[in-house]
Image 1 (cartoon, one colour):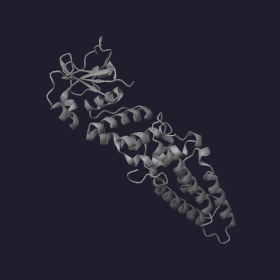
Image 2: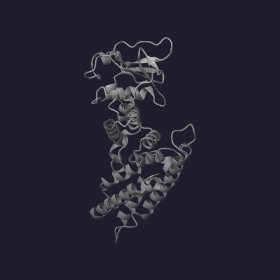
Image 3: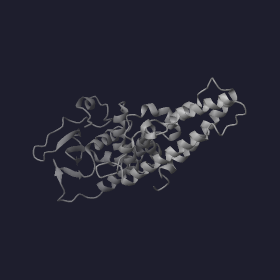
Image 4: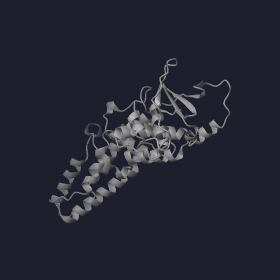
Length: 317
């Protein structure tokens, strides 16, 4: 579990102007551990999974959902803890709330950590920011997720940094929080980095749906057909005249750079095409080098445009 340590908080790194939290108390009866976000001047207690938070209503009121709820008078029969209102939050996770409180108590909260942990933290905060309508936090987390999962046209520049990322998890959080712009890259990477027997089936033990599993299967088949078309169409589409050496060299180049079987290749075709654009082939003439790069750019643009359709990611899907 990701937690803020007593030393971190006592140094004032994450709390801002609020009073420093005391050493966390233990619950001997309810069997619920409390957390480091336990303030002696807090005026409400939240129970999330097996953790308690004693925090401030004014901090929670940054969420319009919470602001409205806190304006409702408490029932005399309502749960209390140490004389304070006790609110049980079902369906949320303690980890997500730890991240949310770190941000709420310090809006400039930034953690320089491994990108995998960054994804887990950011996606958890996004989940709660969406649920409780905290617009500024939602915008911040959505922006950072877009950096971790960039759009297709920028993917070749970042592909080496994305091996850590669970593409299934990206699809799940994008669906849950309505961020459809993340889906094309996530579907493309998941489809091209797993074998046919590794594609998630969408059963109840997996995080993507059966419909998305079918999108992956159908999209990868369509992607392979498009690659096959690229191989067959170039260099045949260029004008050669008597440049037989250029034609033979470029033919071998395209077959070498594009796989005949995506599932066994585990590679990024966008990165391959990006590399071909920047390549100067010494054994062919300047004209055919120029036409070759032009042809690659056209195919790369066509591929980027086609991916949402190949994976049935049109609006509303």
